[in-house]
Image (cartoon, rainbow, N blue to C red; front, side, top):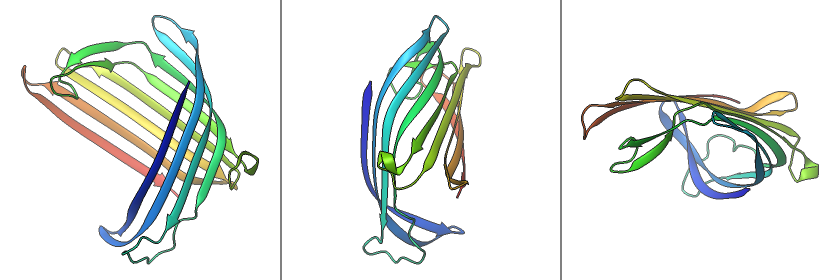
Length: 196
């Protein structure tokens, strides 16, 4: 069981061809309340089912001291129940100095996948009807005694009035190579694609 609450106030800057042209304010409040239970647990896998409630409220306004040259995004209030299924391979490795200096870390070196779906509607307190979907996929490999490769991806979107809204797909990879007892080479690549 768990609860997660967030309250973020920010100024979002908009760019065109690398040049900032305006900015607006955003107040984003979120909250999750959930229960989860392992359906299958063995030496190799854990399968977990989660049910919960999410509130996702965004309000947009003209930020003081910033010119507003384009229309503000529409305020949105999403409140919805959701279900999520997660599959995790039970494979962990203890390493030193991977992502943290002078720390021992337990690193997940197996497949981790999940898919979730929710339905927002005015009856649940939302300001619209939406089907909210998101999924995540991650895996890691030990490439010999000195190298690790981590890859993960995430996709999320809303379906409203027959159209896709706020769709985003993110993929990233991280590569580590131990070059000595005290040094490590690290590189990372991240790509994001958004729609509407």
